Length: 313
Image (cartoon, rainbow, N blue to C red):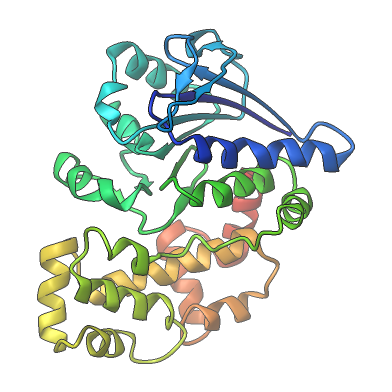
């Protein structure tokens, strides 16, 4: 069962909050038993005033919320700095010492970063917030995804990605079957967590870099990933290298390698596909190469990494 505390800020997206909690309500109706329990709170305990001016009723103050939950989520607005009070940051730090998955939606990643809670984790956040986030937190890495869920941290870009994020939490804490049935009731095809540069590139990436990443993300299983990315960006490989270093502080080959491993770990954790199938789907030359890559990234064999991911869910 999913048990969640959600902390809302003023000016939060009313639509986003609905997309977060509505799947949980539907899951409870479908399951014949309680699949999810959640509390909506604010730091003050007063209703949150959404960006459309509508009040969102809450159960009370975050500090008084049920302590024993699976997930604590901070859903903040376009101006996260108005939310980041010392009291809230201290509270987040205290919750991080527990067993709950701690997450941020939309600009919620900014609060987690400000509290020092994203070190060693990937951050998914709204593309409009990326430039400022990168300047403030040069030591943190971006997920280049609509959402990112790890064992102890979770971030989501907001918008319609909140629906995918909500369903992913249902999969993890209730069951894959309940999440799938909920998506069916919503008449919704769940989207991948893979990078969406066609969206991100519209707001903060050099458009040539966006085209290159799009090419990589949609052709990892094909040979010549970097060459095709350069062609998509209408650049030479040397020019593409300079662009990646300037914009992302990495190289095209390293970026493609990271994409392969993220996709591989997702497929190992969330599907029952054979290891051989996953290896070739992610662009590895064979099972041996794939096994070496997974062991280098996780310290485990693909089978052991899959088992560990299953236990962590």
